[in-house]
Image (cartoon, rainbow, N blue to C red; front, top):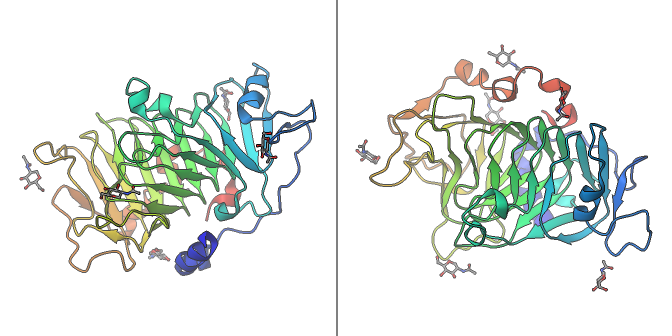
Length: 339
Ligand SMILES: *[C@@H]1O[C@H](CO)[C@@H](O)[C@H](O)[C@H]1NC(C)=O
Ligand SMILES: *[C@@H]1O[C@H](CO)[C@@H](O)[C@H](O)[C@H]1NC(C)=O
Ligand SMILES: *[C@@H]1O[C@H](CO)[C@@H](O)[C@H](O)[C@H]1NC(C)=O
Ligand SMILES: *[C@@H]1O[C@H](CO)[C@@H](O)[C@H](O)[C@H]1NC(C)=O
Ligand SMILES: *[C@@H]1O[C@H](CO)[C@@H](O)[C@H](O)[C@H]1NC(C)=O
Ligand SMILES: *[C@@H]1O[C@H](CO)[C@@H](O)[C@H](O)[C@H]1NC(C)=O
């Protein structure tokens, strides 16, 4: 069902499909191995235990996770580089992921801290995640983060991020999100200082709200650039109220978000971009721009207010991966996942 849905909604972008990659179904040499109910004493029964066993040094480490559902929060914070790989027969396809990390902690239960609610938290640099579905299943009523990312040079490849309000906290550091699925309803890609580049993702809207909420509060480096993503209605969206989305609203009054070449099948509000709240617009210093936004979800009467920036093709081209994460991106980004 999910696969069929993805196939149908991906159709317009098939010309840009990612190259297919060889299956990854066994652990690489020297990897720590995670397997549900393992009886092998050299393996770990959870990612929590494997991460706790990583050496606290500068060495590069790989954790390989066999299929299953793993409950509980994980915090990656050792200093050396960490790669976490999920078992998959098709690494380029997020819809074929077999590993799920899940918890359901709302920020309201942890003193209002977005970070502390995160199912997977990254508090170190040089982390790469492959083929993991990361869920915060709390649902409606509080911020509840699936992935809380405070890392620099973090690559998130073909991962599914699932939540409702505030799914992905890109709060600090340079990050790429490539070939994944990002689902939520309210402000579900957000953060104060993150510099992030998003490409070839499916962004699934589960209820009314804004996809992004950039929390940029001053003229600093925070930026979210989206290129060639698609916006779809989540398969399990609650249709009790009409599900109408905005590309973004400004949490901080210097919010900076650029959407390029987005193909939209979910319904966008004709304003495309939103103020923060009535009486608290926060639009004075924002840079919110979209270019080549197309698809049946874009209303024929779409109009952008005067605080939205209209780009031409040349201006749009200057907002690329280097603009978001720096021109040394090839040193740490997995280039197989870039178009
Ligand atoms: C793991 O063990 C638990 C408790 O014995 C059991 O309920 C569960 O079905 C097992 N899971 C798998 C995938 O074997
Ligand atoms: C991360 O990798 C960069 C090189 O790409 C290195 O300079 C830096 O020290 C690493 N950081 C950590 C915390 O390992
Ligand atoms: C769906 O949304 C309505 C309000 O719009 C709410 O009353 C209802 O509980 C929601 N259902 C689920 C399953 O979340
Ligand atoms: C506009 O976006 C679509 C994807 O939504 C892409 O296929 C097309 O190449 C883009 N147009 C330009 C001029 O880049
Ligand atoms: C805030 O935004 C609303 C809706 O776009 C607009 O009508 C109003 O004039 C704005 N207020 C200020 C103070 O800019
Ligand atoms: C990004 O755009 C800048 C400014 O136009 C350009 O100098 C740079 O080469 C581009 N980088 C990539 C990776 O396309």
